[in-house]
Image (cartoon, rainbow, N blue to C red):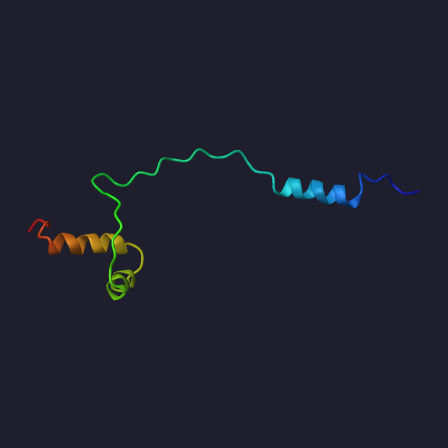
Length: 77
């Protein structure tokens, strides 16, 4: 004798899909704020200049900022 089935194949697949795609409770997002004294801007740079700073990997934005500070004479001596 066969054991009783729980719904047809479509219902079983639907239940499995719902279980697999069930969203967890959303985690509260921390507000995204730039570091103090920084401002987000849009800046167009020559591709080779950008590549020069990006070649050393992460931190390229800080390196550009340091180069601009030095060029503007804003670094303490």
